[in-house]
Length: 358
Image 1 (cartoon, helix red, strand yellow):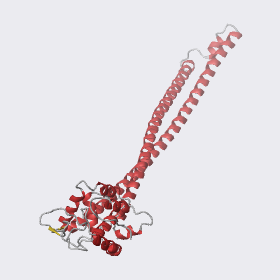
Image 2 (cartoon, rainbow, N blue to C red):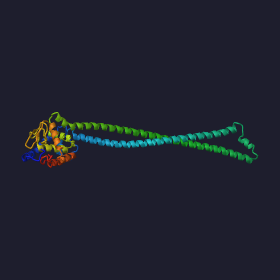
Image 3 (cartoon, rainbow, N blue to C red):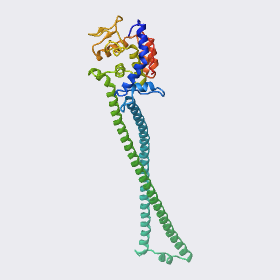
Image 4 (cartoon, rainbow, N blue to C red):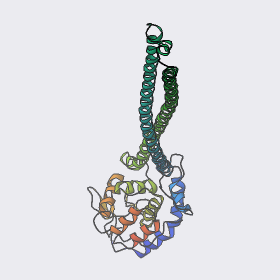
């Protein structure tokens, strides 16, 4: 009850029956769909038993949600790496394309220069051998001496040799240009293939992220459904247990639905004894909060309420009235059932010391 005055006899009796009642509630809770607990430390079998192990338990769904989120974070990291590689491949492809354009321009220039040189040689040959103008023989015959003729012939041989050398060099340059073009084209093909492969990887990772997002959405929806089940049960007038009431209480307070929190609230209910152990109906924590139509249960002012919804509302109003910050802080941490019990015992609520362990 949320008062400092308590009956010593009642406190003794409640402490005596707490362990047996907790075990009974644990057995009843195994079949409940609203089982919960985001993290149950090793060795905390009592808290695990209270929350149950249903196939779609909240603990398993929360674990699945955490696992899915971790997978999505890993996939996002992979996507970032693949995207960076794709960008690098795109830049490489741009660079190779530029090199290919330059190589093709070089090849065109080499071919044009080779054609020009060949035209020059052909022109000289046409002049010398087809038009009837001076030929080597004419030049030699017109020489004034043998020495002059030899000089002229040597000069003509040098011109012919230079022509051959230039054509050979131009052919070599054209071959180099063709080789460079082929090499750059091969690089370009590899860059294109690398970009295609990376794009496929991006698509595959994106598909995985989409699949995980859909899975996470489904899991979150199922978690929300489980979290809302206790409140819906109360509104519908269905059968309420200490476990479902504890879950609804935590849900209304916006506290973590952990094994420790549920275990602590269930033990608190049993230590107070409301509804299930007395006629303070719909009032598991024996609050004295006034509500419309509520009746007084005892001389301290503990109320009997008209419905589960009204009793839950009364308990929420009471714990939020400014006197129970220690309890709320322990529940907000959600990782220590005994800390919640100690905070309750130290508060003005009036509950004696209790333990949430079986």
